[in-house]
Length: 72
Image 1 (cartoon, rainbow, N blue to C red):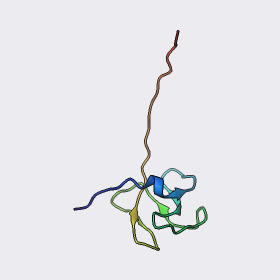
Image 2: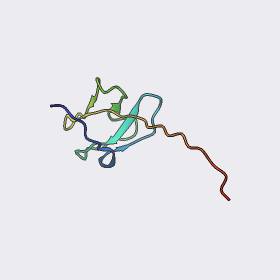
Image 3: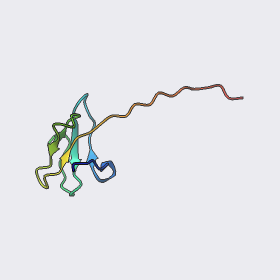
Image 4: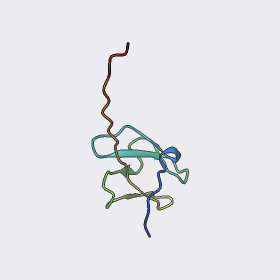
């Protein structure tokens, strides 16, 4: 059975553009410079494999809309 594990705390990454996130450190510990390592996409069906350990990774965005209310 295929599942997903949130590994955000175990990786490092650079600044994203709209659909690409540069991975700068994998869960396995392998490191790259910004934009010189694997580029993660947002498509779950097309994950990026770490060239060192083979882990399949992709990224997502989370949007929150907040309202500011007057406090008395």
